[in-house]
Image (cartoon, rainbow, N blue to C red; front, side, top):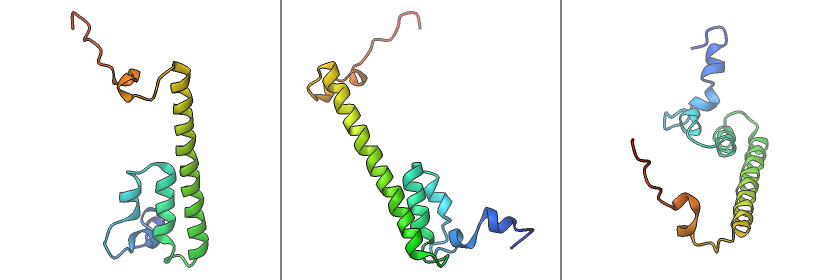
Length: 104
């Protein structure tokens, strides 16, 4: 139901008319920004009449996520080399067990 445009803002049909009955945001809010946006554009591509444009937007967000992940892997590898780590994850500082402080 449309009340002063509120439904069009809160629950627009291009995000709520999936045959599963699931609303797009119920899925994308559990994802990172780039992948959530990519899914949003894929979800609505046949429903807003802008299919090719929405798919290009989804690809833009997917490529951005790929670049983010690849940059992160490069940064992690560079940090390992700086610390002199060999890549053995068991020697990474975040995997070492620290003793619980006394008096707690």
